[in-house]
Image 1 (cartoon, rainbow, N blue to C red):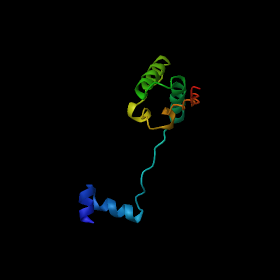
Image 2: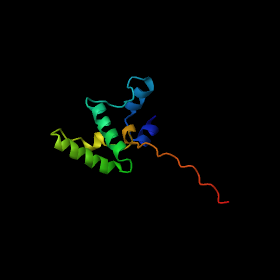
Image 3: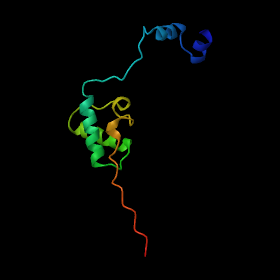
Image 4: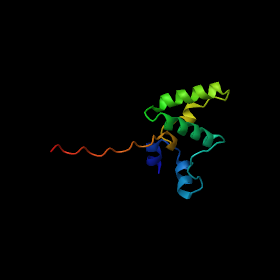
Length: 100
């Protein structure tokens, strides 16, 4: 147990509590306003599917500033791994017919 704790650089008590189930693993945190923020991000991504997350974040910041709303914490609301950041897939083109 000591070798594992030293390798992982965690306390032995932490490993024991995790094994016993006394300390559950932390899950995702949700705060008030998250759904509204995701909807705003989704709206911007739908309008501009070619924009990256930094440009969308700048647009969101500009919109919120003009509406006299609080700015969004970049580390919290602007992580690009959320579903709201995924642009809709482009329609697939049918392959061109071979020349005769």
